[in-house]
Length: 405
Ligand SMILES: [Zn+2]
Image 1 (cartoon, rainbow, N blue to C red):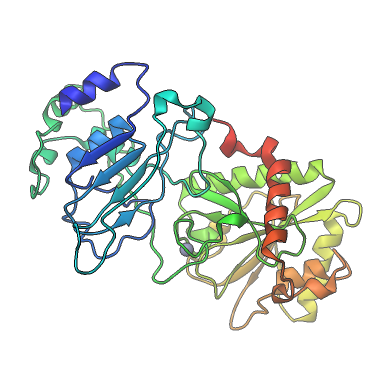
Image 2 (cartoon, protein in one colour; image 1 turned 45 degrees about the vertical axis):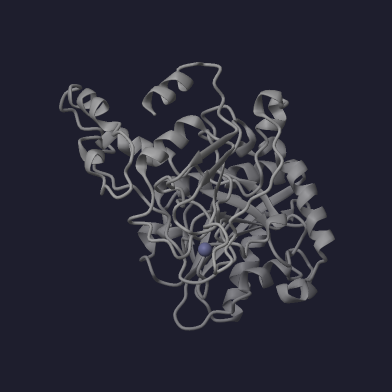
């Protein structure tokens, strides 16, 4: 297997293989993927097969042995923003032939060999593409590689162990610890029930998705105030901005900047708000307001006035301060961020009007569309939503960093 791997991957023209068949599952293939049920992920899979799949980049990887059917969301074979786009891989596990529980054991498909495909067609990224399940694992492996894999709890470990050579090489590099060495591999938190916003969850309405980055994505808001009202969402399950890991925050910032530029180009001002109250998955609501109709001060004023009316205290937070230092993780809050970077924060005590942010923006003082204050009243047909998303995607494209590879 090592010979096969090095033979293929030392060839610079090597792009990948069309089909890979293995008996065992690759270890960790479920990471960043759709939910996997009925499999014990601790004992399932072989890390050697993960290495193989990572190196060979199969367009289709079929595996058996576990008696389960699992069709993982397609995953990327490149690092976004750093490497040229490559084709995606699909992992498909099939159950045993004619199994009594009628799980899928047959998979029919058409495939054009990659050597015959148009390169741009080949690297097209489907909307539901995820991070590679192996990339991080391989990096960790290289960093911490010791004799470990030789003993990787060996059940079904039929393959020769890859680790020794690399292990020796690492240790000869001297004792300089890498700054990331002590970091535990981070797994994306999983929701306890179905979630409408976890990108890998079947509940997500894919036609609303506008752009997908490495840690975050943008989707059109359901029942949007305006056709260009969107949400910035973490791909994994995180509850609020103050609980986001730093790499996710960084990408949120990138999306904010890109949206600001895009809105500016169409004569609109960026306004964003978050309500961390009765919500499981962070949604940063971004609503553009025409520059002509309101100044930043007008919008700020509208929030302050309407908060006073409801006897809610809004604290002004200066532009560069970090919410994480002001709010304890786990406590409920609402904040709005204006295009100047200023924020207005309300610490939620017991009750909070769920639609507050939306109500202020829909009010006469801002967008003047009071009939749209309640999102449940704003029902659009699927065709409308598809159209809104299409128009947005086209306009946003020049600003969308996720497409720049
Ligand atoms: Zn979620």
